[in-house]
Amino acid sequence: MPAEEKQANGQPPLAGYSDAAKTAVQQTARRVQEMHGAIADSYFDILSRLPLFGGPAQLVRSAHDAIAATVYGAIHHGSGGLLAAASLVERHATAGPAGQPPGRLASGLRSALNGAFGDHLAASNSVLAVRMAIYVEGAAVALDTAALRAAFPTAGKRLCVFIHGLGCDEHSWQARDRADPPATHFGRQLHADFAFTPLYLRYNS
View 1 (tube, rainbow, N blue to C red):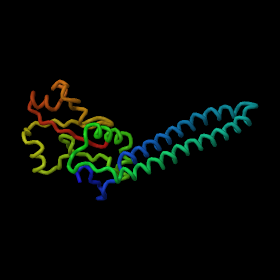
View 2 (cartoon, helix red, strand yellow):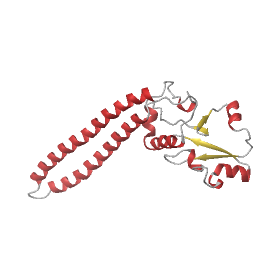
View 3 (spheres, one colour):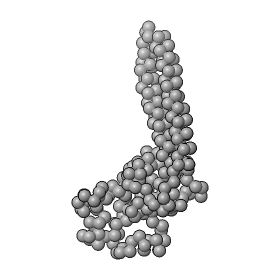
View 4 (cartoon, rainbow, N blue to C red):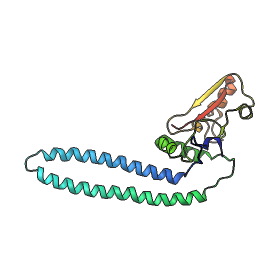
């Protein structure tokens, strides 16, 4: 198992994109429900204080709250059931080539999920939880002498650590494709111009 996917509790990582999607949908729906409720409560509170409107406003409020609870409950439980079933399929169907790091798109999606739900992914022992490490060509580098020498055979004394932003990974510092100008690959440019060895850190943002 790659070093970046070993979890702190020693257990094998669980699930993947279906579980993450379930979390994303349910957490987003919960936040929307809370905001919806706060806005509605503020208006109903104003109406309840007005003469002749207090009684009707309370009846409308009760109906509104019941309907909203039903709708959000259906979203929560419906999406949970559907994505839980998808997760079971994913657990049995997902099996990438051993030792091959994910591509740029998959890595970017994983990092975006960590930017939004990283704490939950780590706490739930998800395979998508990003472990802090130095990455080369999409793969984590073990912090031992042999691995570092193999990953950085031409390393010099001057180091530059690239730290990405929220929801990103080390690819944000690199050219998107071969057609891009060489100067857009900041690490290589620093190495060529000033003899810096670039180190790309990936972490749960």
